[in-house]
Amino acid sequence: MSDATRRTIAFTLNGRRVTADVKTHETILEVLQRDFGLFGARESCGQGLCGCCTLLVDGTAVSGCLYLAAFAAGAELVTVEGLARGDELHPIQRAFVEKSGFQCGFCTPGFILMTAELLSRHPRPTNEEIRHYLSGNLCRCAAYPDIIEAVKRAAELQADRT
Image 1 (tube, rainbow, N blue to C red):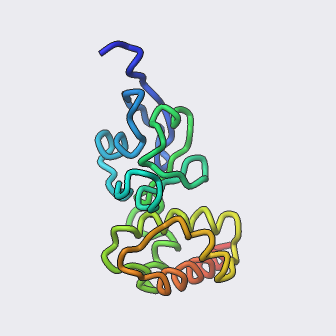
Image 2 (tube, rainbow, N blue to C red; image 1 turned 30 degrees about the vertical axis):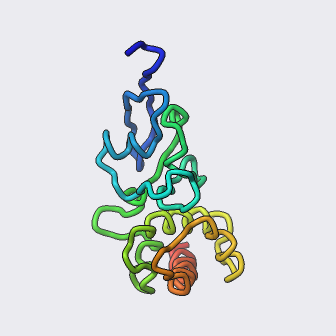
């Protein structure tokens, strides 16, 4: 393989500076799973339509199945695994547990990270804002009412922290 098809990138992953040797066509989702053993974000549709592979890049939610790993060079990435601090769940994670904002859990990491972006931009969202913002995430179990309640609870928990 020629040097033109590989590169080493450095980025911040869940608060830690890391490097990865990536092929120019690899997605960040592939690299996170292969090199770092992070499987919270999952590929489901492979087209950026379902939200299961959501992760945050410099605070913005992206579809990990479409985001080329090479573009992560110099960026700050956060996965669902990076929200918790040790054994202490992040308020958004706690809210999803408290309000049962999941059933099978396959889509939950994507919803949690979309909620993180939503609350960073709209700390007290309305139901309509929540529905609109999360419309790109699909839940095959149809746990949407509980997910909306979890997002509202997450907003409360985060407001209590400040």
